[in-house]
Image (tube, rainbow, N blue to C red; front, side, top):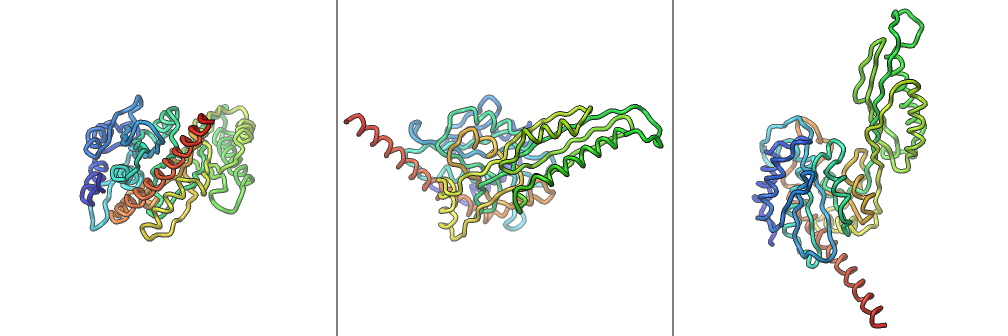
Length: 365
């Protein structure tokens, strides 16, 4: 299939952005993609949790999986075009990267390699769609769609631990020397901040556990808080949990998320293919370590195959009221990814051929 025209690629992205799809409400967008993508040369279906799977290429042989998420944060942004900029919720995070995957996969010449584009649900919450996908068959390579700029290739994402704390204390006068519930919650938060400051593994933000207070409320008698800690690779989660239990004392404690950090091999096949695609468009590849989390944190440990993250857009615009993407960058990213898919497919097909030849020689012997 020939590369989609700029107008067609833009129309796809705009329609995706016009369909509101906050986490847990991706059904309309999923139905649209299931209807639309056969026109792009894909066979489409939805799985049990609402992920959309669009596939093209032979049923046998190596598989490249492209994983992008359909959901967004709930706050809408008016969809409009101003010059080369398209505004709207999801233009950057992450319908822009997902549309890039569709356009690139539809036009890439991948020979005997099957390409699967997965539009997954609930990435912005706890990764339900990617978790379900990761339980399925292992692909030979995976690219996760997140904004890193058209010349950026993501090779690492921090992990996340989400902690909820609740404490009660007897009613007391404000002049009483006894510890009050709000004081206990504040002390717990300060203890977590100190622990993180004492467990930094390097000079970069990527190497530092970063605690963020998401919610806090308290009185003399009752207090609760929720905090998230972004964790670097190698962070000792069992030791951290033991510390949390001790620091909480008689308070109640829940850990709602234990997403490990991930860092892929920068010499791997996927990273090399994407860097080649950037160079083919006249750019200089930039390998990026990100302080947030992504579906890479879920699928890479489960599958253990070559992996990286790619997608157009400025991640500083994620979740903001002025989220937008430069359509020129979007077009360039499609070409980068198309070139990368073709190079990656050629390498995977070569490896598969070498394995088949080796097996044949073994039989002959």
